[in-house]
Image 1 (cartoon, rainbow, N blue to C red):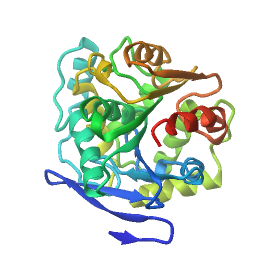
Image 2 (image 1 turned 90 degrees about the horizontal axis):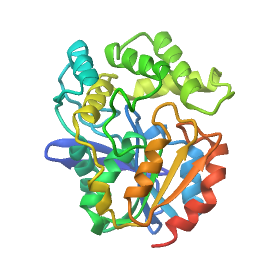
Image 3 (image 1 turned 90 degrees about the vertical axis):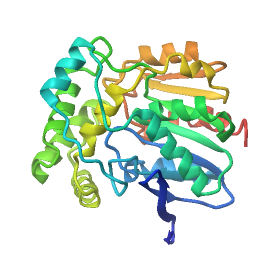
Image 4 (image 1 turned 60 degrees about the vertical axis):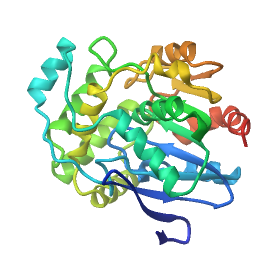
Length: 304
């Protein structure tokens, strides 16, 4: 484990797959396992969220999902044409790993850190992973926070908007584009899925994007993670088994995962609470966090 002034870093291992993590501490804080979304590295968790949790005596623990950041990579190159046809025809899709395997990565990380029970905080694809953690390992979960996610396997009738799909396809087909191309693509994507009207193309955003690119070996894991989502079964029955207090948060105009998915999960997850945020799309900007930090704190302190 590597020590830093602000956090500790190291690797957990699940059946040969190495998972890189960052434990922000403090060690005596109430642990929160943070499970991120498609193609996101642990550095994509924004400082305002980490600071908010620490300021309220929680211990944020972030990690790179398999196939991104500093965690283990896989080798397959998806067949985009064939898989795209299968997706639209709703035929079975094969992948090197499933969402279930990624859930096991999270559980093994808790074991590595000798944490018996933690709050699970998740967003987007991370929410899909966390649904399995919460349903299959109830003894490990204090509370479950599910943001901008779905229990359904994406399909042509429950898919991101066309503009978002086009960028996702570009990223899948050309993971190692030039820095300029990647920056333009990221600016366009964040403009679509972030708060409306926010200025994205700033020197700070460009610098951060380049730093994140430099941290990761390559971007090929994005396509394999996307394939794992499409190849995994829906979790509509599974989430009925969730016992932990659950808070569902979703943006009213989320272009990545339609808000109808939040209402559906709210009906299926026992004793869950639902918060719809009008000016939220898919991301947790500071202005968005301000709108649910009160209900989040109340939720987290149920089992603290």
